[in-house]
Amino acid sequence: MAPRKRPSLDDQLNQKPAPPVEPAKVSTSVSVDTPTSTKAKARVGKKAVAGFFDVTTARQLKVLGAQQDRTTQSMLGEALNMLFERYGLPPSADESSNS
Image (cartoon, rainbow, N blue to C red; front, side, top):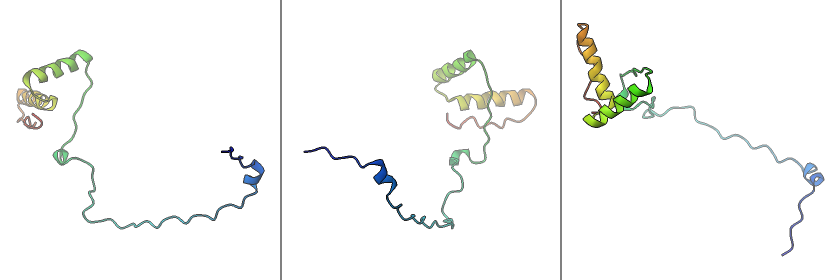
């Protein structure tokens, strides 16, 4: 089989341009059952609370969680409730989530 000859640059430049393609029509209506948020149902009505700590603190928290078979979120909820009680506030952190 003989190799095909590549088209010359002159031939390519002298070709007529292809007709423009019309863009597809997009519907602007929104379906009623389309979710308006990508937030997980378990996170609705909740707010993230975070902080930056050194590597040793983060490691200790993970090790403790593994030893107690608990999630970091569950242990942080317990710690926050202990802090609230110390300062005379009612506990409000849900410790049961993700435990």
